[in-house]
Length: 291
Image (cartoon, rainbow, N blue to C red; front, side, top):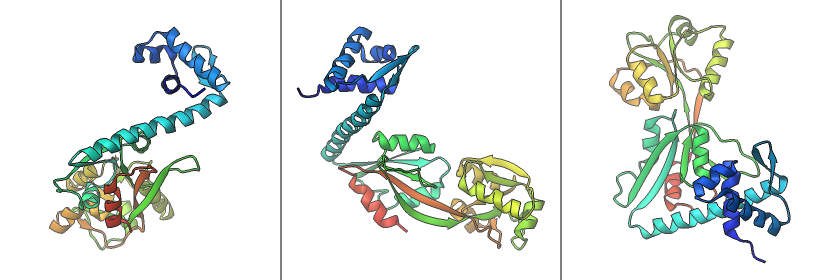
């Protein structure tokens, strides 16, 4: 007997919600009717898919296997619809997610080959790494820009493309920063505007300060590069940034760069999800940006 995909979809919904009552309300079904659908699926597969512990439903081993397959089946269906809808439109859409801490200048540079095209619409959203990767898996994004590689194993379908590696500099206003001063002196004499502690650049900065036996004063910890640029312009302290973040300010002389570099590098990656029908605009962008 063939598999009933209505039953599978009901199971899929309950497995992701983890609550039979909530799922029944969302699907506008009675709880008993939803339970019958799942029971029919369990009988077809020959294994229980859930076990109840108190008021909560937990997947059995067979349930976890079924959920993996259901995720793949319904993701493929969503991909088919999205691909054919895009193919029917005269304008192509590219959905890009970008890590909130990523330089806006870098994002514009990456997207420049398709910006301004009358046949392309770019939808650009920012978020945390976990939000972005979840968006890739659910096909809400075609591509995600990040400054670190996502964790990967044999079960994930993420593909990471290294785009660029840029040295990080110490910058500040001309009134504050003497470009000829040694980094150790700058660390000891000035407050710093730094990325937050979950950032790889910040980790490298903390290690450098430790090696130099200096405990710098922290003026601000910022997870947004645009805000870091503004704080540096307001002379709140010296900022640790990739020059691309403040390229306009460096060109105009509003900010200056220390001559001694901290030997810290920031990496930029494009992350995609393996799909049967990838967005053709992705290949165009990667061909123009891969390092």
